[in-house]
Image 1 (cartoon, one colour):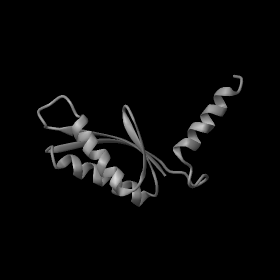
Image 2: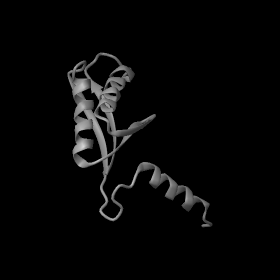
Image 3: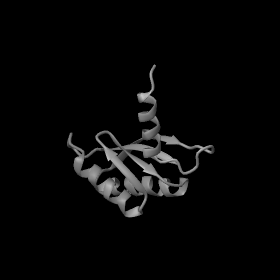
Image 4: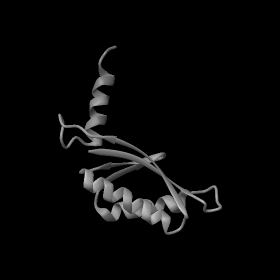
Length: 101
């Protein structure tokens, strides 16, 4: 299962969110779930329970320093390709880009 998410702390009194987001990412890392972060979010790779635990950890970490947290999440669940990783999907896209239109 793949879960892409973005977390936004609310009510901190600051327009900057990097400190709170870093807390969330440290909490995700502590769960042991494979995670890849880019500029606008993080991709989790694991089981439903592992990914939900990582999301919960991220939210709890932000709530330690902000009164509210908002998530945007996208879930990719497949039964035809169990264990498919984010890199697997990117490799498929790279192959497709090399094919003539």
